[in-house]
Length: 92
Image 1 (cartoon, rainbow, N blue to C red):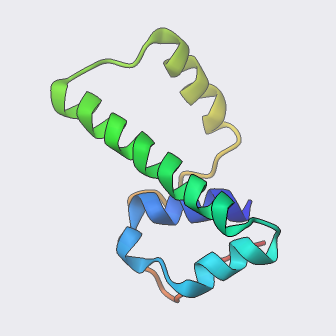
Image 2 (cartoon, rainbow, N blue to C red):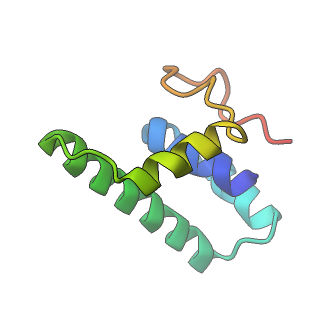
């Protein structure tokens, strides 16, 4: 869950990532190499998404099905919100 929350923060508010966010990942067992991989994967997905959006590329049917499936398990209520109320995400 910590990794997903970090990925969400990096995606939506990358300028707000602070050392405590990285430390939280270490606390739950991610190595520095893992954290670099997480950042690369988030950045790659953001890049690919912006290319597709910028060129008007439609998602493949299989991607639409995955997106619909994930809506049931991913809380998107905070997506698109601006600013953070504290320097840490609410990690459960």
